[in-house]
Image 1 (tube, helix red, strand yellow):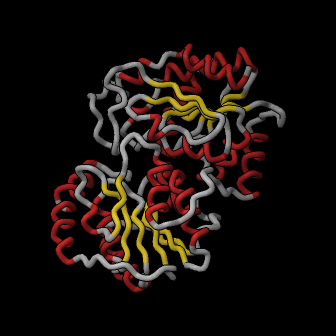
Image 2 (cartoon, rainbow, N blue to C red; image 1 turned 45 degrees about the vertical axis):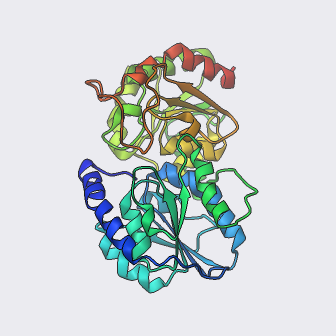
Length: 374
């Protein structure tokens, strides 16, 4: 879950005592299947939601007549706007206590918490009043006391499989493992029109570089921008591709700095796309290069070839989940150090990046690019 330090502090030092206290009032009862109303709670950044789709799909297939609701952030709901497995969507708003009464009125049979560390989502799961509450038991997080069914969250196991463990616990048959996107014709048309406006010929091969990675204001997963500059120049000179830079609205400055140093003209679409437009762009790309972040997983979900750059994060757990993938890992004995999304094991360098990402050399990434472009 994306959060600032103050929210993390409240979640830990207020959330843990609340979880312990409320657990005294928990009744561990099951209701007969099939459930009539199911709630999923996913407050996290985009990547977690994308990786949870195979589990959501398996539960949808197991209970085709149930009404399924998703409580999520605005970005996640945009991604899920056309998802056929969700019937109703509720936007999460802070402070979370305002959500309690509307959720209780829904009278859900099952509430499924897809987070793996925040106590807030576990508290919301409990507050729904659902007789069956399912979520992860994550080591050291003291949040599973509020669930009637706790599923071990296994560190080092890919998150797709962790989420699928929830579906398996609910005795749902898992037959499909692919990620999905559901951008519409309008998103695809937007991509075509913006590339025409940027004077990119229709038959040009596009390589997308997504230089920012991780939560806002925390660039320790980011590959240094001088490497992106050198990579862009090398790819244009060797393969004649068009470089497109993407990012969130608050990441435009980084893309502009990189574009200003590239010898060849790059198209800056950072800050101009919503989630589904970004997915449509990725689906047209011959290659996407990114650190570990939501857009990296979005690119993988489109089926685009992806090169994932991993330093603090474990690619076995957070790597791109697709067929055409290459992972370039940092070369430091302490890497990876990140499990829950915030407990970095090293101090950031003066520019905010991490020492391990500095060990990923340009030539290593270029060799992987040649595998896809050569």
